Image 1 (cartoon, helix red, strand yellow):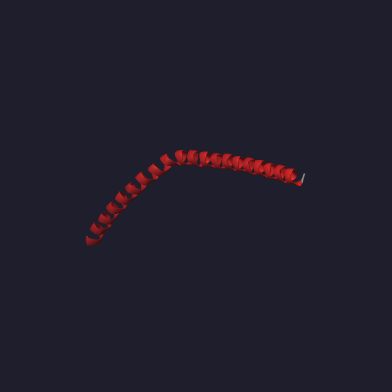
Image 2 (cartoon, rainbow, N blue to C red):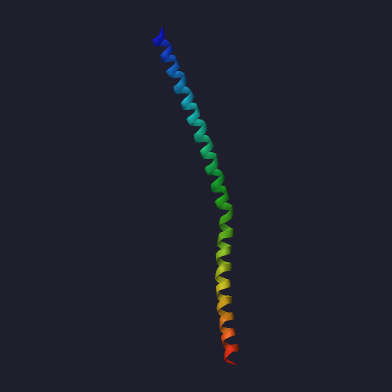
Length: 73
């Protein structure tokens, strides 16, 4: 009788562990989906920021040249 109780207890424990694993995997998949959507939404912003940084570098170079000409005058 005790062997049967142990077997049932082990089966219940394994079933609970399997269910917990499936719930955890589902939650992890949902977090990954949210992060992927966030990255897809922010990608255009990152590209725009890179273009703005390049423009800012060009403006800074122009300003440096203007300042150098003013200093020489």
